[in-house]
Amino acid sequence: MLLSELAEKELIEMENGIRYGYLSETECIFDPKTGKILGFELIEPSRMPFHRKKSASLFIPWEEIYLIGEDRILFRKAFNTRRHYDG
Image (cartoon, rainbow, N blue to C red):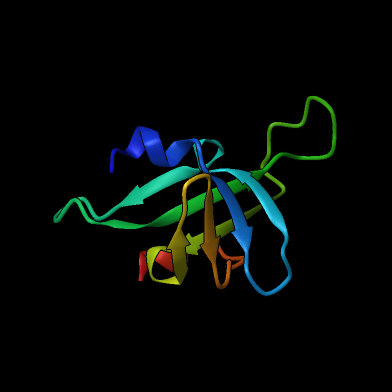
């Protein structure tokens, strides 16, 4: 499957059924040495107008993805830390 095909899929957390938007709205995090996908970071914009700072981010590790369906990606858990993929 191409990454462009994945981008069209909606992200849904399995436990609560929360919709997090589409994969195209995330940053794909790769391991620069191996090229392996580590996960996806979804950045929530700041609630203050004209405020450039990011208010929060969620990281969905590749290991937490349970199912890639025809138009949805189901995952188990997202983490509220931006540094989760740094080791």
